[in-house]
Image 1 (cartoon, rainbow, N blue to C red):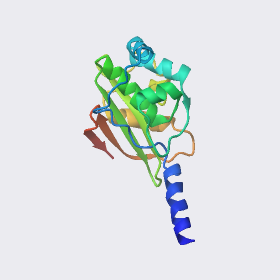
Image 2 (cartoon, rainbow, N blue to C red):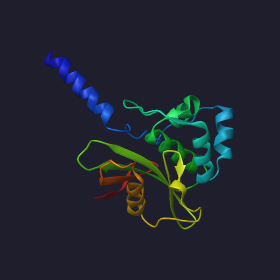
Image 3 (cartoon, one colour):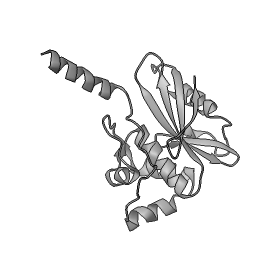
Length: 179
């Protein structure tokens, strides 16, 4: 009985932690699928990537695994981690400097992921599928912390405040930690 409770407790922790871990693009080999590559080539700006995700993907939490961008494209279902990984992969293909931010929340095991793009002399981002969360197209952030602060303002009422964050580059190297 104690083992069953332990297993159930562990599974509940996985399901309540928000998005799963970040898929590591470093070393991932893109499949040889002409339709997939045509779509990637067409999405040559973060705005186009966001618009594509809004039109073609639906939110479905993956608590125990993180699909690669191709799998997300095939299934059309993913969570914040999956969307940020897809955005970073496609933008990087077009030579954008990209990052992913993992945000942790106070007093909880929840975490959230967003994709960040260097463009027009500053930083822009997609949160889930949404580009800069409806900010004017020319608005850019200067720091990762500004993005985390702005994203925190937009969280649904009832979400705890963010407690810390980690910024990763395309190769999953830690670039910045913030509190």
